[in-house]
Each structure stands twice: as C-alpha cells, then as structure tokens.
Image (tube, rainbow, N blue to C red; front, side, top):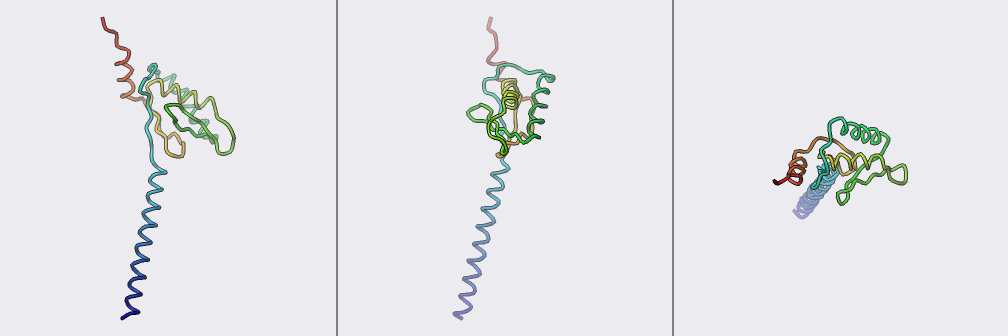
Length: 133
C-alpha cells in the first residue's frame, strides 16, 4: 500500500507539473502574438488613399528588409535586430499614417500586420476641427 501511495503521489505531481508547463507555454505564446491597434488621439489631417499608399509601401518594403516598429508614447520607434540604429523613413511613414487618421496594428515583435483607415481617429479629427459660427 505504501508503494502504491508513493506512485500515486508521484503521478499527481507529474500531472500538475505538466499542466503548469503547458499553461506557462500557452500564456507566453498568447502574449507574443498579442496585437495592439494604434491610432492618434489628436490626428493632424485625413490622408488621401494615394498619399497613405506611399507610406504603407514604405513600411512594407522596410519591414521586408528586417525593420520592425513599435509605438512608445504615441511615437513610432524603429529597430532592426541585425543593424544598430533607427530608420527615419519607416518612422516618418508610420507617423504620417498615425497623424493622418490611419490605424496601425502591430504585434509584440514589432511587425506591422495591418494598416487601415481609422474611423475613430477621423471622428476625433472632425470633432477637433469643427468650426462654430
């Protein structure tokens, strides 16, 4: 009986350990794949589709070259794991889109996954630029 109890205890500890490892792994994967949507709370203008497409193409091209982008205090910050420094072009393009009523969806690794017009930012822009007569 004593040997059976030890086996059961060891089995239960093994199962609990497995559950903890599984939960920790899933939690870190979920956090790594977390996507944040960024749009300006004080947009400066509404970009036309043509102007926005230039900035979107810049970001896609530079991202393919290894550049990544994060937002810190509402400002884009670029980085490349293989190169020291920052990239002004990707940062300026992101800032143009951000201030031009576009939304940037960026994951935790700094990959820009989607760029689209932001209705929320357009609404804020219109509210801030209403003219009262």
